[in-house]
Length: 260
Image (tube, rainbow, N blue to C red; front, side, top):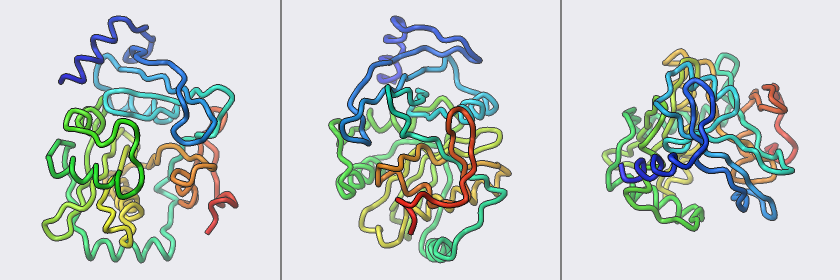
């Protein structure tokens, strides 16, 4: 609630953007790119004046929007178009031999539970452990309860979390958003001790299955960045579509940089 209040106070000085529903432009300044060295990032952050319907959120996903907490954003970086929204058409996607193996092993080892996002001290500790173990600490990490809630619990969309348990031990969490036609992967974190279990891949495969179970056509994987190792892996999920110059373009083969 404290974070929401700070957004609303800032919104009093922000510009109202037309739309359904209207949105408040909360932040629009250039910063150092978190993915590519020597690049400048611009991510205008917009706050919908009310929660989005499933249809409204689906339209924003199709337009290349991403969600972070209560806010929406779309890259508008000066002189750079490296970030490409990427999605999978669940009607056409077929698991590879390796993915089938990971799925079988994961189903045997992990119990998956789907709930609404909510805070627990256990999740906060696991999130920070993941950031440390994966070498992903940023200037604001480790986060506290308020930061976790603002990032992974507060939402302007219909959000869920997939919890992965090894026995009674929570080993991973994936936050996803649901629209009328799609599922959007927001963030996944897990215990680095389970790296060999390919929890990240397993999580995407379970999200694909959730799309099929719920009758959803697309799984949005966020942004693909060919020059960034931590974001380039998404191109291995084939076939997929990437949004280029305002159009969704199908790809059947991975770029040479990510081919395995």
